[in-house]
Amino acid sequence: MAQSMAKSMDWDALWLAARERMRRDMGDAVFDAWIRPLSFVAAEGTDLKIGALTPFARNWVASHHLQRIERTLSAESGAAVTVNIVVAPQRPVVAAVSAPREAAPVPAVEAEKAPEGRRALSTKVLQSTQTFENFVSGPANEFAYRAAKALGTGENEEISLLYVHGGFGFGKSHLLNAIALEAKKRGKRALFLGAEDFMRQFLGALNRKETLGFKEDLRAADILLIDDLQHLCRSTYTVSEFLHTLNAFSDLRRKLVIAADKAPTSIDNLSADVRSRLSGGLVIALDKPDRETRLAILKSRAGEFARARGLAVPDEVLEHIAGSEENSPRDLVGAFNKVATYADLTKQPLTLEAARHILGQATVAAKKTSIEDIQRKTAEFYKLELRDFQSPQRSRRVARPRQVAMFLARELTMRSLPEIGKRFGGRDHTTVLHACRRIAALCDEDTMFKQEVDFLRQVLSRGVN
Image (cartoon, rainbow, N blue to C red; front, side, top):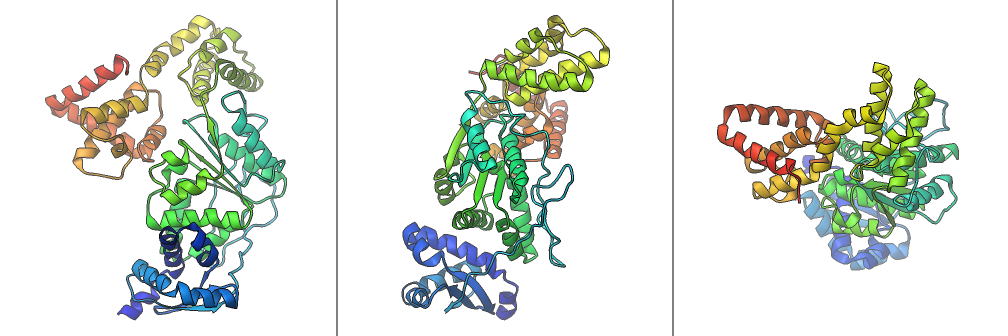
């Protein structure tokens, strides 16, 4: 029975998990010197072969660290593991990409067919419009823009790890997309993944016992770009694999670009060693754009609209939209699209008064509250912590207030269902829609509950301090 269970184990993944546990226990200096260069070679039941690069390293590790390695692997696997240190070169990274093909839109990496029976790594589709030329820079984002462009175009080879963070709609994904496009122009292999994609595909490979192929696909890239890192699930395997990826790209002297809504030190889902590793890169914040930048963004969008539809938007309308300090660049473009589309469909002159009428009610609501305000007030009302809204907990004590906050976010903000879901721990739009319907139904059925929701709505509608 034990032998059968041992055969079913994914020793590649268990070795990764054991490595990260030993890193925490031993410290970076000792780990980097002796454990990090080791590689998993083979397993017969619970008898494992671990490879060292030289006879000297083999003898030293066998004399000083063998018992720790066996204990750690036994703890990770739940079986009594015996380890034999042998001399073996690290397994080579198999190239998994071919020459670029002409197609639009295109994946960030053009991958060869995976070996029969193994799934190829799927990537985000690059958007041809999200280039550096189309990115409007200003004081709030110029540093991030210049660093991203220098990395993407190869002007600065010293930037190995770039981490950009900022609010939703501030242009992080645009910068990552632009880097991937520039890398492709230079014949580089760029792999563009969302954190959820990374997590889902790794866990899928883990279940199919294809983790080695997953790692080879990742390391075949010259530049790895990961978006929305805050959605990376806190699990031993996933976080260990992500840290191993960080270390591997550093060893291979390849580029890593990461975007998130917060700085590394503020993301709860990451372990301390991952936060430390990310903080050692070039970390740059994208702030809210000033009025001049907001106006430049709108003028750029107006130029695109005029070329496509033949409709000019007056400057006074653009200045009115740019006057909202609370709006992100994405919000600004959304407001512009609303007034421009209205004018295009109705064939009515787009005057300042018309724009105020179209945007007035929504703009007032947007200024009064935000999803963060709703989460904070709802958490205070139900005696919860803000992090409870991001957690996977499904207990009624947490789930019902979270549904209330989602319901109010949909009612009091202009955010879409997918964006609301992202703010609540990366949940999808169907979860938000279900929450909204459930709260509406409960308000009809339960008078006391309706009073709670009405009270929160009134508090938020008066403005949040």
